[in-house]
Length: 492
Ligand code: AHR
View 1: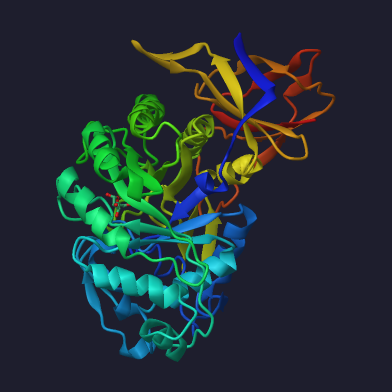
View 2: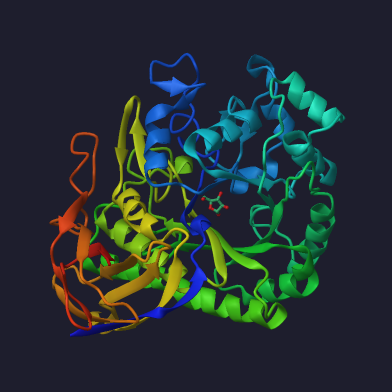
């Protein structure tokens, strides 16, 4: 028997909506085709942006969108992407396939996309190959209300009113594709760039410094020590790779139970990463003023056979739904420090929410997890102790059950649970303290196979269904979790 104790009497920190954020880079078919089709396209669009994709994002209440990269951000020059579209210069997208980037989708189009989707914009500035002045002027261009050269340029380009720009990242992976810098050097650069990211016209920018690659704790320590007081957030990047190395990441769809297990075990490492990076941040910032922003996460497999290796296109199965469910539970449980996260990436790239093929669009199992978990957005995180039976494969084990819980302002309890075992159902006894329940309803995501996925021919192979495996008890809830499942319980 698995046991969970939820303490609903004492609310923890609020789960920031932005933990359910996303990331869209100029990479492969994410922006081009996935978001941007142009006004002249026969695919239904509003000012060139796909209507079906916007509607899908609105449905899951996407809170924030990070753009234009990723590695691309550190070679992006924003002035190339404003003004008359036909006159915008083309560049080579050196990181992602060496294809031409024609800059049809630039600042105005991104901010329009965010407005249509209802998301807060999070731009990542170019530190690797850009200048302080370039970043300073980009923020002024977007947000300044009064007379200024940049505000005048924005108006001349058709946008009278300034936009709000709540989030700015200062470089991306500055330890790698963003310049191969040492932490002390980047910390100084961060201080310099961030100084000139100004708050204009009532806009307040939340400044996010480039944080560590997975378990590079020395990077976090140096950044917090040297630049912590100048930042609002510090990022962390961690990808789930089931294969033995980056050259052999494994197939997104053709995998056995060993690779299922390896992926889930790898994604659970996020918990240790947040705990250890968080402890270093606590040392420098005991009041937890600086947010940990996990602005790239998700599963990364070998590309689909026959596709451009630089486009990072991969299918998305029930295994990815488990990766998402487990990771989001981890974020909820660390709500005091993790206040934004951005899944990589929104459309057609890596662990995508959405896949497109010409006019066709399909939502992935990962999308459905975000649909389920939106119940947690803005709710109070509740302490949720899980005593799980192991799911064992060979000599190795991971917890069979993983969960998180929250209570929204209307008093509704949401518990999200994952059963990592692909074969066995899991009985769970859940004690709920401080709340007397009378009603529970559930929704589940599961399928007949570990690698079940949605295709353009069968778009609903993995989809949400009503779940009747939970009942109210005098102490809380009894739950029979199906094998290989992600479940949301809503109780009052
Ligand atoms: O998401 C794909 C790439 O992964 C990003 O461009 C980069 O930041 C990371 O290495």
